[in-house]
Length: 303
Image (tube, rainbow, N blue to C red; front, top):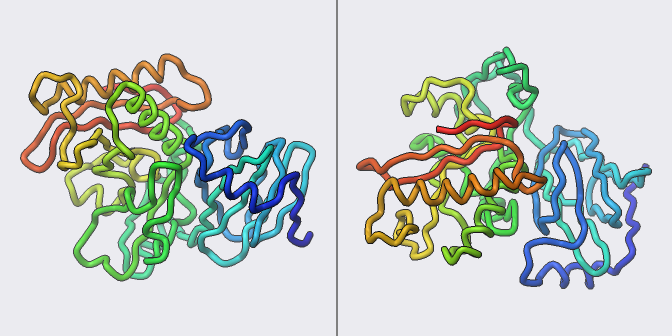
């Protein structure tokens, strides 16, 4: 079916509505087993793959093929990997779904893409969970995409693997929507508590298996390998370190405990804005300050 554009409000009105102060809309979209009201969210699919989206909103897709379904919409990705978008509108508000069509990758047969070393993923599913399936492809991060927002408060370049030098010509990564939802929810709660910051500082986001081993991490199940984890801290004063969250005049592990405590309160509340996952607390080293690990592994983990 050809491109479908059917919605209840004019595009210009919807686009201006998305410029409001709130990062959340009054309706939701659901895809890939998650549901969100964030005004910007990101997911990824393989070339020509279908993406069903459950929603009551109208939709517009400048590229790819879009059709109406009983529960919402179904979008078929173009054959060419790249960055695309589907806009959902209702009552003058918009949710922008950014969709990255992945560059295919054959685990066990390929070790790199365009000279960017990836390595290999384990073939056996950890705990039998499909979220630990080897990625079928990766986002090709071109210069034009470096500043693209993947959620209201985060840009894609915050999650890039740090495996340099030698990887300046091509960069590939993954960013999972469930993790972004958790980071946005944590940031909102931090700001409400008075820890003001426009985003969370992401010390480490995506890691390839190659890079993970290169930094001495021998685990094959780290959620960083799948684009579903981030090591973060609050840095409202932009000095490159965790802020003094507990007000004791020092920047140390106790500040990581304080931030993790906020994350734990969100986990206890549960719901669509906090998919199950891990919370880890880390102390300072000569290379970095204290931080908190957040992931969306699908089950509870604490350390």
